[in-house]
Image (cartoon, rainbow, N blue to C red; front, top):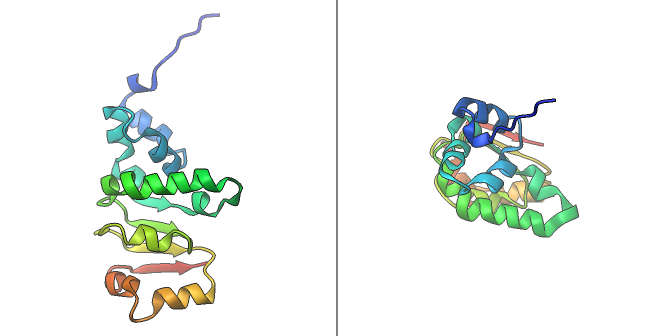
Amino acid sequence: MNYSTVNILDLSDDMVLTILNKLNNIAVLYSLVEVNRKLDRLTQDITFTQSIDLIAISSNEHNDSKNKSILDRFCVDIVLRIQHNIESFTLNPLSIDRVLSIVNYSKLHKLTLVNFQLEAASHIFNDGSSFVHIFKQQISNLTIL
């Protein structure tokens, strides 16, 4: 039997993006940003970074230190690279303040909030909150689950 190997870096950009789009984008961003120029450029592609779901890392209590590390890296290193692409966020109460206060997300128009209790929602949506002040005119699609 004849086996051959192909390095992912030898694949076309379209093929790599197709593969990356089948994976969790936060895991890919966390693992591949700053690995090399090609992967760095592809992981920041708009098709890959326009919708960001942070629920999996911020709600999994089984590995809090790893999840905190991933969220820290996302907030400190990754979001600055992709902020101009983000159109949609899915967040929970543990991540909303931290993630939304980092930078200006000029294209953000959809926000999904998961596991929000009435107390958290009233804190976020009162007229004096920074959330309302910043996003009142920007968010056109708000879902609370």
